[in-house]
Length: 221
Ligand SMILES: [Zn+2]
Image 1 (cartoon, rainbow, N blue to C red):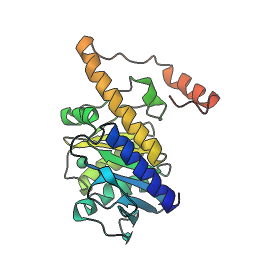
Image 2 (cartoon, protein in one colour):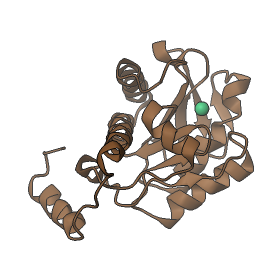
Image 3 (tube, helix red, strand yellow):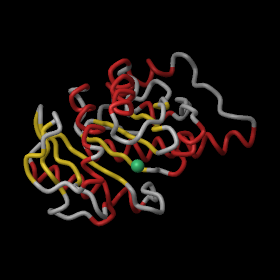
């Protein structure tokens, strides 16, 4: 993805997430897009609710900053993004927020089960796991994220215990949509638990949805 398109997509994703309430009240978030096999464009820090062309830095996926001044609070989490790009080639966009309903599960140390069909359209076929708490961006935290991304292609997001969510999809736009859908799932599951709890999808649902995705390639959800 070229740098101008990456900026445009990240700005649009941030606006969509902000308007949907998925940055919660503090507007805390960080976003990135893959530029090439070993470079990414990432938010530099500051106010992510109102990004502009100057809000980004170009960073190599080994963590080296190539262009743009990264604020210290943002430098701390470079590896949280970089390691996911290194681990999974298909990832084109990564977004971290404290989306309010998904973060309830992160606070409760409870994975989000796959019981909401739209999630499966984003390739989420496994529960979104909880990564044990460690300081954000630390080796321990990043290793937990990498292990989850590496071991299971049906995982496209993780819950950071006592903190928030990290989603990784094909592009920034796709990842924003994935994050919104994950938060919807979390909200609906919490509601379902008031009337007897969520129920599993039938065992064959995963295969049937895959088949229909191929047949109706343009239909999203
Ligand atoms: Zn955070």
